[in-house]
Amino acid sequence: MTSTVPALGTRTAEGSALQAVLLDMDGTLVDTEGFWWDVEVEVFAALGHTLDEAWRHVVVGGPMTRSAGFLIEATGAAITLAELSVLLNQGFEDRIDRALPLMPGAARLLSELSAHEIPTALVSASHRRIIDRVMISLGPEHFSFSVAGDEVARTKPHPDPYLLAATRLGVDPARCAVVEDTATGVAAAEAAGCRVVAVPSVAPIAPAPPRRTVVTSLEEVDLPFLQGLMTYLG
Image (cartoon, rainbow, N blue to C red; front, side, top):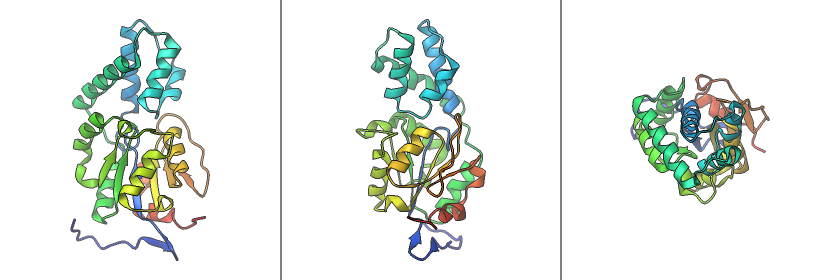
């Protein structure tokens, strides 16, 4: 990729450098966390069950096996995990085909990372079929590759997806900046040894400096901000 934008220095301190940026998808780059909950509510209503709003914080950000499994157990619905997963994915696809709003600041951040040739990967608990559809709106040219939840043995909150992304990029996880919106994603990134920027979408996330920084919007995040996370590597 060729850029006419002057390169920003990736070093913020002697021996400290940002090597890659790893981005979550739902609720981080695209405003879709509410889509998943709406689909879950509709699917279970069709099965004769009403979901408790309090459960939303339980299922947000998790892999479908965990969130769908929890809802089946909580409601006692007569449906298998495999059957429910199909219905949820279909309902979600219907919604993103109609509208796919990006989070404020997402398009600008992706363009900035691309312009300065920062290695960037999408790391999501969503399935490959969903990621490929969303990527059309995000712009696949902004990413070296993407990691889907159904492509790893253990997805978030386990560190595997982020460790895989770092390995594929050939970088040190400790020199990767991760942007996440849920506690589940933050746990995965931190377990992988990455520096994390949390942009809470549904449930609050507490800051835990220096390895976790919390902001209210992606509009607060740019390349110098991400480079600054590498200043105090311990």
